[in-house]
Length: 344
Image 1 (cartoon, rainbow, N blue to C red):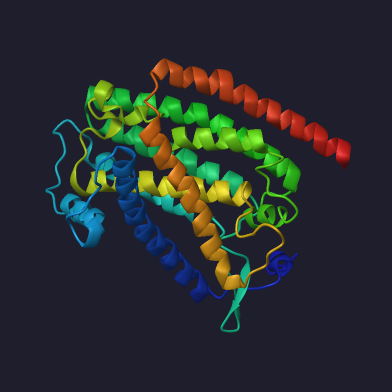
Image 2: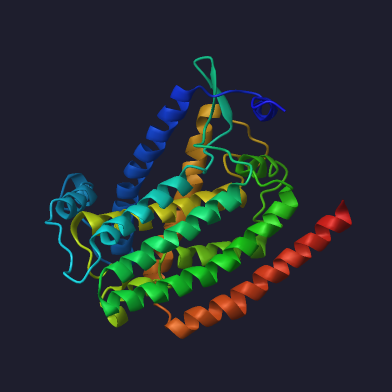
């Protein structure tokens, strides 16, 4: 088989310059969406708590995230004398790169003809989409571990160990929740999973898998009520205690970008991606808008939960992950496998 044979299955070729443009667009979109989520979270938390959100910097406080980012980036870089310099700088870089790499596989639409060139509205459509996602999730784990260990602080290291245990525990349930979707769609391609939902979005037949994945997503992104990696009441500040300035901003950026990644994956595998209900088929340029609106709903849910639920104790966090989510995800996978075998 020649090297060009696998591409023939796809049915089109993307020029190298298209791939470069898509890479730039992915990074630029991520950079633009994170400040939007920041200002939305502050405004919504203000309304939830009966107070005003940011309303001083820019029109209606819209430039507050930019002011915060500039403040962090212009701070003097420092590190403890007991830290490991190279790893201390590498740790936040790993977190931000893995978040961007995971964001790249979210499909914002099908293949479209743009100025006579076929372009997929996604960074890349790998044939092992969920495996790609969890591979980079496993690498992101080192961003937290190295951040705590390289700081040279016992408190940071304890926070990193707690964070590592949390991420590993909930990643198992999150992976099993996707297995039911893969069984049903009979493909590992994320665009293929969206296409397979033309008859019915998977959050209906895979409702328990949807709940498990969403709850595990809260823990994977260190969001309330599972924000135990940054529990300042018990850990001073967690794995990022010794980080400040641009390096802390990198961790901050990665966390919010991961919220968008989880929202995008939930939209793709459970909410039909760019598909609309009732057989509505809009023009291709509407697809990214549909995906962004669905992602916004899931992101709003992240903010709503943060404003509503208190933080769990660490033993409650681990017990819930291993004794509730994991058995439920396993049972959902087994039932789905039986149904798929019985109906095919």
